[in-house]
Image 1 (spheres, rainbow, N blue to C red):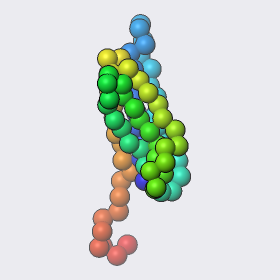
Image 2 (image 1 turned 90 degrees about the horizontal axis):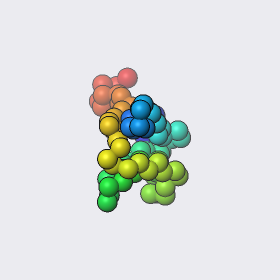
Image 3 (image 1 turned 120 degrees about the vertical axis):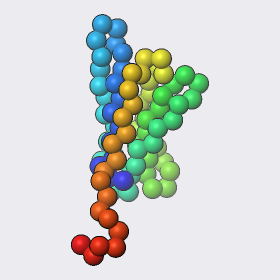
Length: 78
């Protein structure tokens, strides 16, 4: 959903780098996948089309933090 965010911390030799992938429009979400030693973080539309993808070597990824947007509680009428 809009506002969902994933932060990726990557080992860049003598330092670390932080990257973010954010769902910027309504109806989009951020999905993560680990395949064949590669971490993929993608922004995806409602119908499943990939808008953009960030790829990182899995052995270089130090942290992958998924930060979903807080949702309002259902049924409280506000």
